[in-house]
Image (cartoon, rainbow, N blue to C red; front, side, top):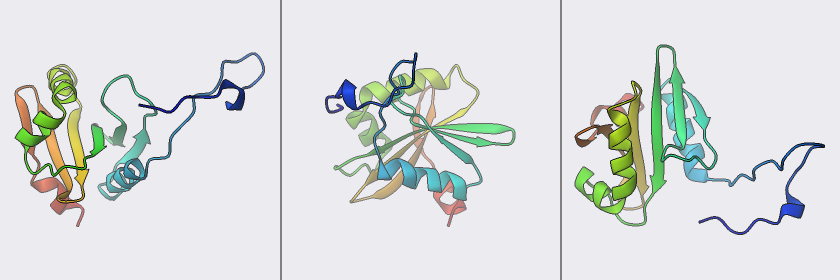
Length: 134
């Protein structure tokens, strides 16, 4: 949930609607750096209408990422679905209709970064992804 916005403090240009405010997210910038290290050009989506907040662009492919921080450990795909049921189910539905690879990246203090690939039938922990950026 976002804090209330004071319309008087928003940037506006003549004859235009107010420019959307942005929130700084260290997690998003860290995930963007991971995408860069993996050879992608990262694009951050601000206040998206779907549970995708990063897009990685690479020649011939793109990667849709939902990066999230969890206070609780997320050691498995089952635990991820338990904590984020609605978002996981939405992304599973997308996985069957878009050609892009969809991933959920979860950072928790107990487990660090965990990377999950989204398929129409469920989630799978991606064992190869972290090794490729070390």
